[in-house]
Image 1: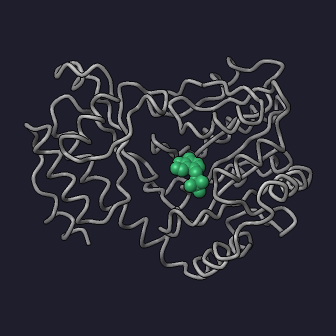
Image 2 (image 1 turned 135 degrees about the vertical axis):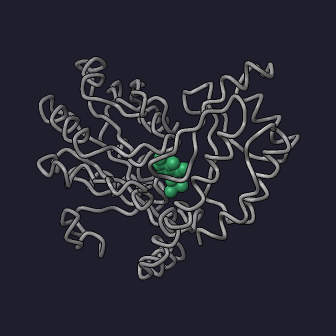
Length: 325
Ligand SMILES: Cc1ncc(COP(=O)(O)O)c(C=O)c1O
């Protein structure tokens, strides 16, 4: 709630917020509260698979919405997917795995579309602390008039570099919060006290999110550069988040791998590197690589990548990481 009092955020009160067992659970209760069987929810493709899963779990239909070359959805494409059953659009900025950060103009366009057609917006703000462009805005800051039809979800562990502690929240209009409270109470009674205590302690420490964002910002170009140094890999610099999302389709073709899943399995077996195949995100020719790891792990990973997939222009990242500290 402390965060709700910041002048750059809409004022939330305790009655507007429900705590949940992580952001996935917050999304789960939000969709249970919002969606009736057969309702359609528009989700970005490529995108994080958990978004479609919570819609399906609520007996809704997740409709994939094609993103543009920068992984953004537009009002025009949303409108092309709209049917009488469309209930909501699920937005995520910064996104996983694409790293997309929606600029204000695009948020405004989507907000106008939502308002015009009476759509709900579910805004997954889990990575809001990790914007490397300085352009991140919450949709409600851009379009406060949408407050009555927007559910914002977020969480403590990603921002405070304490993943696994599972404390999320949703902020929404009273009818959604009332229903979410029932869902939480029926399923888990409450978020375990130990997790709540840990979250409270974390929220008192405003330095960690800044430090974590600084570390990721420093590691991001090194990973992207190393990936781009490998023939057949094309990796855009992510605007936010903690993932690089390179196009590996040329590499797959050149080396006769049938899929990103096959490449991911090969990297795990051969180089002991874990990446997520793009198939999981509706993007078969890509892989997702996380840079939320410590410097030593990243350096080791880049060296293994170099050995496994060279020739590459990559040189040891150690001096650059040191310099950027
Ligand atoms: C976009 C997005 N939303 C939600 C989640 C789930 O977060 P949590 O681990 O807090 O449940 C993730 C986790 O990777 C994510 O990437």
